[in-house]
Image: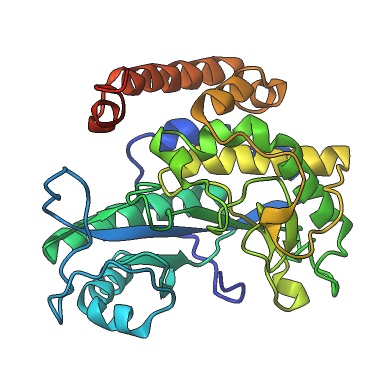
Amino acid sequence: MEQDAPAVKRRVPRDGMGPKIATLLPSSRFQALGVKPVMAVELEFYLVDRSRTTEGHAQPPSQPLTGRRELKTQINSMQELAEYSAVLDAIQEAARAQDLPTGTVLAEYGPGQFEVNLHHVDDALLACDHAIRLKRLVKGVALQHGMEATFMAKPYRDHAGSGAHLHISLVDADGQNVFEAEDPVGSPLLRHAIGGLAATINDTMAVCAPTANSFRRFQPEAYVPLNPSWSVNNRGVAFRVPHGPPASRRVEHRVAGADANPYLLSAVVLAGMHLGLTQKLDPGPVLAGNAYRDTTPTIPTTWPEALAAFERSDFIREYVGTRFANLYAQTRRGEMQEFNSYISALDYDWYLTTS
């Protein structure tokens, strides 16, 4: 996220769940503290072929220039960007036409995987609007170019998943970043905010990972956090403080998948930060080294564990309300039960003749 980008404050019509979920964002609680969230969403996605494999699986598209179907891992590949330049340029052009504040486009790890960055705004609800509009835009442009775009958390078993990363800072009435400090880990308010995120990560995992597929993303050494650690510029931790000048100091929440609802995700993340600020919570020592060798207790990485933590959370009920918490848990449990009732081809391959 480019912190020196101008904030875009233009309101746009909302549809779907946005207006209803808007009431969950804890803006008034931050106002009482004399601060306002400044936020941007980073979304990763895959471009996939419109046809499936013989097994019914997704597959990378034939590359537009060479016609080859790339299957190997790549990262920040100029060749990958060149291959898909037409569709990526069209995404940027459509974003400009719709007044969406997009920034850089990056080639990510998987074949046909990309990330489009959105500039920060000082309105959390508007940042969520931007994320939803970007998703729809990317999918529409991909179809025009004979592909599909998916924000599924883990479309391929052997390739990286797609995340939704929130970059958040807080500004006071004068527009000053209250996380600002020469030392990236030296701001007490930044530490308290991260402390709140760490303290509530178990409670919020059912929102960060809302489907069965969401949890397939949580694998070691995959730049996906497996514990509530934090560090400076370490992409293996849950809460990253990016390098940059003091005025750009912020926290990047790296837990959620790209399939998470940005409104709900922002609500529970901001709620965790608010709790940390009001209770002056400490996140513990900053992590040095490989986050996957950290012995900190792990976060819930299965759907049943995450739902159980969500349902018994006083924090969730306090910040989003008992009625919504019960409804969300009920719908997620219903989907989990329906998903588990299906018998996959793998069941037959492994168990039909061995049981």
